[in-house]
Image 1 (cartoon, rainbow, N blue to C red):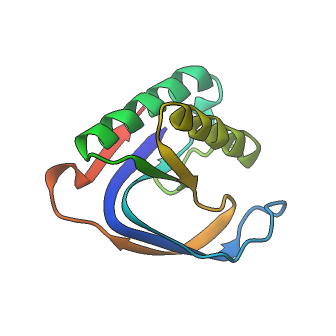
Image 2 (cartoon, helix red, strand yellow; image 1 turned 90 degrees about the horizontal axis):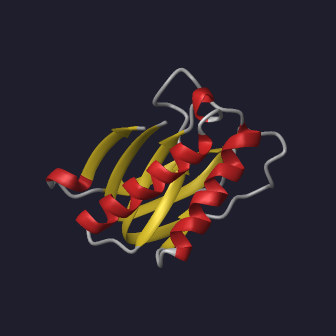
Length: 136
């Protein structure tokens, strides 16, 4: 798994192109302010060690939110950080599990529409922990 964390003063998206055939239709735009965004690339090899990867992802999300004093998180499936890619049938439920764990820990958690390319609006400040890359 590879993750690009970007803290955003403003983050927004609009679904544009459906990439997963059975994804529900979605054209709703969303906007967030002062939010931690996680661009998450789930790799094929993560399937074998999903419990370990899920635990480490949740730990890293809590860490970066603590550093950036964020209580709101957007999880974004971003399959552009590696050549290896897990199947959507694994990735979508994985994201749902992570969302549930983070909500149970007291965070407000949102997901971008799974199975879509999105137009993104990102306003990210320029401090050291505003952008962090992690490999799990």
